[in-house]
Amino acid sequence: MRPFDYQQAQGTAAALALAAQHLAPPGEERILAPAQYLAGGTNLLDLMKIGVAHPPALINITALRQDHGRIETDASGLRLGALARMAEAAEHPAVLRDYPAIAQSLQLAASQQLRNMATLGGNVLQRTRCNYFRDPSWQACNKRVPGTGCAAMAGVNRRLAVLGVSEHCIAHYPGDFANVLAALGAEVEILSSDGTARRIAFEELHRLPGDAPHIDTNLRPGELIISFRVPAGPWTRRSLYLKIRDRESYDFAQASAVVALDLQDGVVREARVGLGGLVAKPWRSHEAEAALRGRKLDQASAQASADAAFQGAVTHGENAFKPELGRRTLVRALLQAAAMET
Amino acid sequence: MDVLLKVNGTEHRLAVDVRTTLLDALRERLELTGTKKGCDLGQCGACTVLLDGMRVLSCFTLAVAAQEAEITTIEGLAGENKPLHPMQKAFLEQDAYQCGYCTPGQILSAIACVQEGHANSADQIREYMSGNLCRCAAYPKIVAAVQQAKLLMEGP
Image 1: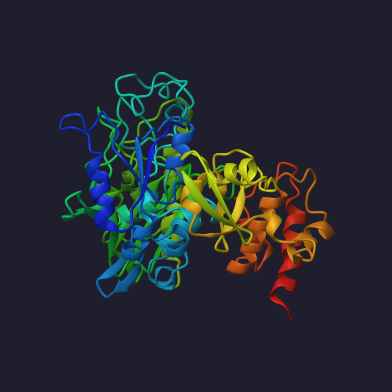
Image 2: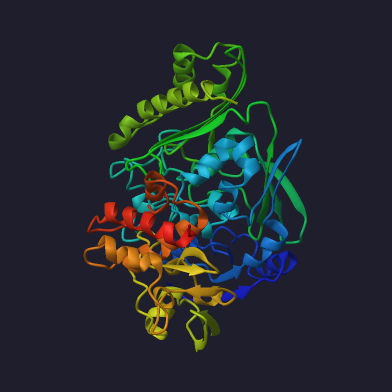
């Protein structure tokens, strides 16, 4: 691990000010890594140890839990503070009752030790588990070093993405929780380094790889996520997260599905559908939702929805099995959600 | 950097490189080698310690960031005038290990698992202990040990 400056921020304003001191000169923002905020550290310290991340400065923002660690619900929806820990949100009574897909996505992610450390804000920003990204001894990785190529295209890519990929990168977004935020139409609240707030759709937070796969998100240097807002809706109680893994527990998804349904007499009034494990960024499938609207939820409509979701899938050798795995996962999730007692 | 670590009820003042993890500070500086280094990448659970009673991975915790917390390691559970913790006793009685390398992490994780209320069935124990790998695969006996200790920890 390379040396770094370490500072502990006592509050939000101090954290933003410390980050602003480390901003790169205009024009070089994308080249010089700015200071990084350190919360749980479960992904950042990992990447620093394996030589993938080498920030010149870390700003410990754990103390910001005071300001941004709460979980609150009201009639308009759920507000999750970005400094809340995964374990706290996974076991919050209102989340369990009204947003079961969120609780499940967190319970099925990582281990209890990691969930006790990792914050929600850090969790959504976790980086890909692509082997070539994580191993600097491989030269070709457009995500790690722009312009070097992609060793994964013809390499070990069983875990990698089939939706949202480009000819420059097929890395997958590995998380679970973020797929639920995307599917449920959440917003993310962000503070810029001068303290002004902005809110964007969660679906707009992450970027598709395109021709710049080294830029994962639309966050600007120095910006800090402070909360997620999930709108209430008649579909959130009938929601679930189905995760298919190589091993039964403590593993990343090979495929996963988020489903939230508003049903009347078995007919879909409204649906929210998300996918994970095989997507380039946290994924909401508007196509899968449209295929369900107004239809009776049964095997045939579930299959039509899954077919729509994977229309644009692109595979590369080892991961050729993933569109079918993804379709079956979504069909099963839809039928399970339809059968839920709410 | 100067840091102050509160480990097993004792305060330790030491100067560390900023990159030092809590795991390395415990093992290399405080000679508390009960906490084990397995993967050093957050995947095996051998380095599990309790921070204010909460199980965390010491390999992903910077020593400088652990200064506010009461840290409990395997050495803090029993002592000359302190009997074995019920979980330690249960691991002995159930023979819940072979090589023993993962055992300190297993025991601390298991104590937290019971205290969190996540040890209500064998399935739940398996799920909530899945962050502690055992390459000897003593898993069935670990589950039995957690079940045995839970009864004693929670009392009649």
